[in-house]
Image (tube, rainbow over all chains, first blue to last red; front, side, top):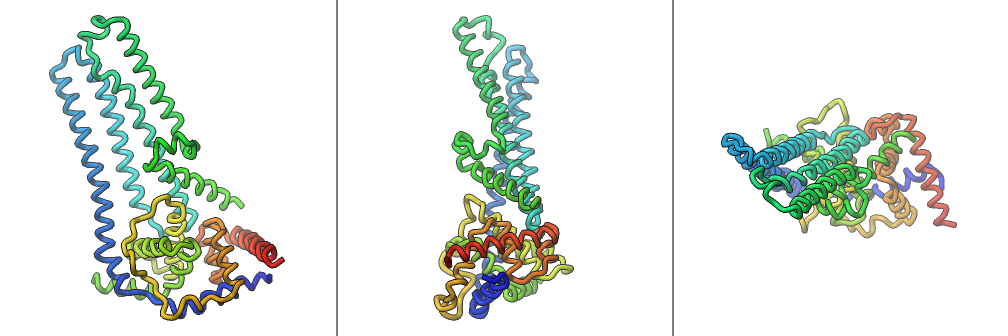
Amino acid sequence: MEETNFVLLWKEHYEKIDQSLAINKLLLKELISQKAKSAVKSLKLFKFVGIVLAVVYLFVLGTLISIAVLHYSSAANYFIFSMTAIFFINAKALYDYIKHLAWAGSIDYNGSVTAIQEKLARLEVSIFKHTSSMFLQLPFWTTFYLSNKWFPQNVGGGYILFQCLLTAIFTWLAYWLYKNIKAKNADKKWVRILFNGSGGKHVSNALGAFKELEQFKLE
Amino acid sequence: MGFAKTDIFISVIESHKGILYKIANAYCRNSNERQDLVQEMLLQLWNSFDKYNNQYKHSTWIYRIALNVAISFYRKAKTRNNIFSTQEIFNFTGEQENIVNNENSRLLQRFISELKPLDKAMMLLYLEEKSHKEIAEIIGITETNVATKISRVKTLLKNKFSQITT
């Protein structure tokens, strides 16, 4: 087939379609007014509720830490230390979430295709990367309930061993997840199970797009 | 003011409706998904309408946004909920079944739909007879790169056609 025929074939195909294609103006008006607004509103509300809940959670954690510090007793050392770590990890996660929302909202689709697609792919991979930092709080949930009053002096050797093992396992797990939840592992089965429905597939797709973009720009 | 803006927007879309239809058709073979994609493109165009820079042609602005939405839509695992489930924004005034009757034309549509998302975007622009300069601007690569890639994809299409016909 001659090269120029592609353009002719394309024209032939769409010539009649172009003539008979009509736009439903009423539906279009409705789409860009009422229903579009409500769709955007519900999405914004969903994100807003998420942020409010996270702020409330941080407020509760902060209050507990403040009470413990104001009525300081060495018995609460484990609690203060663990809760402060949990507080900061969650505060960082909230900050990242808001940052990503702002970032996503600022992407203007009226840019060159490769530039916008790169931004979108980078954003999805970044969201995924930041999610892994949430796992760092795992070991602190195994220590917050301990007290200098009874641990370790008033418990048996068995319990000390159990506690040390528990904290060690969770520390190792947190570290392992933090190190291995990486964009390059997004297509691994365990990551897909862990993030099922919360971005794993998106990241895998984003990575694929990233590779394609790199290749596309180079060739 | 809002009313005037809506009317201007609708008239711009009306004049360039073919672009949206062709892009949606190239990226989605399934009619329900195509309908979702058209809605998504229209919403994104509406959201960006205030920021429209008149140093570019309306068609360039529409191509950029619609192609970006189509490529993102293509790789999204989950799509936005369909706002209109029974009616379509695009209608045909004639009988659609009789519109396309050329086998080569059907094959070309099929081969285009099988291309990678970025190659597809570039070929859509080429088939719409956009200049290399304009394609480079919309896609965001150099003119030389556009020429090389178009030539490569055309060879690929030619090979596919010859495989079918031999």
